[in-house]
Length: 629
Image: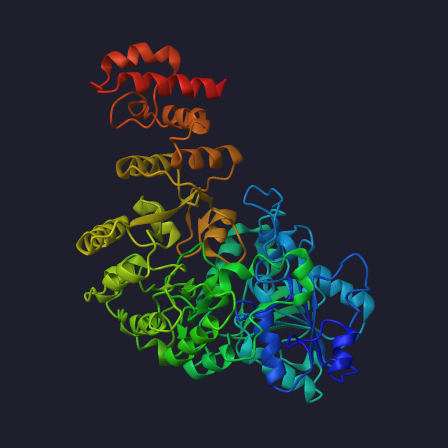
């Protein structure tokens, strides 16, 4: 019998089941690997004695697939998948993506837009009275009213639109077990109003003790300042130690109530989760389609931690995983490393050991373990907190142990390295080991921009810190005799970034002689501070106005400036420079970003600095104009 959970009636019969306790419906293909939330939740419930079946990517146009396993005894568990279904389907330009890595064969279109809503409504058609529990990233980040970029409006809590009975948010291991036990004890979903990490509907508030009232749904729809205020309050209530119950009002007597976040997992609890009997692969039923691409990056990777105290404003981790670091023990990680080496497809390379931020292995300060994180202060930005404790010794020990495993040739770090945290470590042992053993020619880091003004809106560290890091990285590689380079991730069109800031970034790229192959436009996804800025034009933390680049043309201009050397971008870059009064950057000098147009070239060439290769310059101009034609 397959080690996978049942996906059909035949599978249920092999296990001697007449009915599942829970049926998990997911927008992803069924991959039983700890990098997938659906796999963790289903295996966790199984370990707690519940019978769990899985319905992956059901046909949403009819009820046959959703009813394939019958009606569960306790509840349907519904998730859109590992990624918000709208992000999965659409680029930042709102163009349909051609591939879906979470679908067999990478085929697009196997899940609906707003998958959690569609699946839940489909369940209601097939089983009117079944209990529906919502979870996963899509539900977690849409648990309260939120700005929706794709429809350009404020949408209601997902719990209402999906007709769910209860929503579990965040990393839901503790919450889902508590909900399951309550249902199994005979408590109806409507009466489960006491579990942290959940959101529920109510017609009254008498059961609550001093809740924190958010601006009503009607208010935030009609007043962007009210929206910004609501988001600020939510942001301040994301810590399990200090958060209060939040209430959002819909109409006269309908309330969405968010309980405080569930307590973070302890090291032992994390170890137990990742010791569950995962198959670590996609279900065999996908072999004919060529498998599921999403497994390729994670099959030989190890999740070592969760949470992040980095504080990037465009990242939703604060709302989903929280700011308090949770980490597995070295023993647990090494045991998974051993299991990876026994896979017949293992070629000797562990692709990653990390999490949201690879080199965070402990809370930023001991105070967080008893009092939680600071409500109005970040650990790393705009400057390093005096209480920040920087230590890479534990992570270094983990990496060394993995390197020493038989069959392991190399251990890479591909999840984000927080360069400022690394720079603040006075002991350079980790920098040395990183450059010597864990980088393969290039290290990806995320400075995001060079303008301190823009970095402030991003919640990123100042540019001077990145410059100091590059010097240390370069120096260490020179010392080791290695030719390795940094690959900086950069973002265009973030709130607060105007044309002059974009040009400043282009000049920096000119100076370091680097042109990114890819550029990420800011993507306004639910539950981020940056998205609140994008929608309201205000910084919710200060209520001060923020400049927001919104038109497709302005976004294209900012993106083109980052890749100013590409001939296809010439017209946009020239337009930007003239508009900003920076014609000094058009010419033949070393400081110029682009050459003049053909009819300007003769005049400008007289003023140009002497060139050793005039022919190549003229040839470049001809090539630009050929491409323009």
